[in-house]
Length: 233
Image 1 (tube, rainbow, N blue to C red):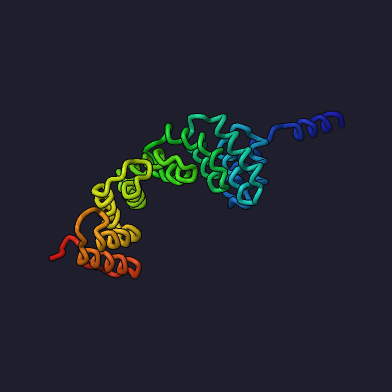
Image 2 (tube, helix red, strand yellow):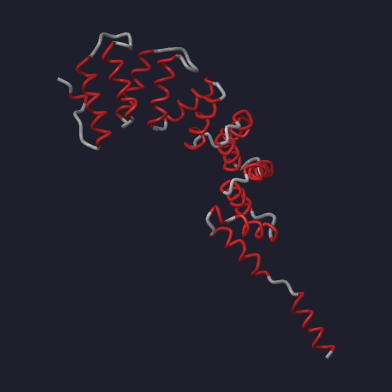
């Protein structure tokens, strides 16, 4: 009897490593709104599980527990100062919640760690415009433009047209509007058409070219082919 009781106690006390693995797998497989409970259990079993910690933070945000989510995101960023994604996560969540000043340090850290990432530069452009740091926004626009991102080309054109974050330069504005329009940015096509119509670049009006850009913008919206402004006779 005593041996049987001792055997039962030992069985109950034995570790069950599969449990931690099961919760980790459940955490990774769950949708964001269903991730909180399994990810909490996965972290209880393994506090070093970074993926579970990140998914828990996103799960908390998805279930409108913003304060707790931010606390989790910030904890990840503090413990992983060289993890660009951890810094970007905090910056993106804070920007989405309009916590613009609080997002800036995390954004600058993400930029320092991963300046080549389009997502980092795009969020930087948005955040720095909201905080009226136009020079930093201009730098992000240039990085995006040099990477061939259409919205970056368009924003850089607007910077030069308005003197936003840089000296105004209408020749540069036209250059970048044309590149953005050629890349398919409809807003750039329309802006270019308006400016060419009235000679806003400091050059004589070019109504025929303006009309071609208007046609191309309309065709792009409708999903139809349009005349190439480069073939203007």
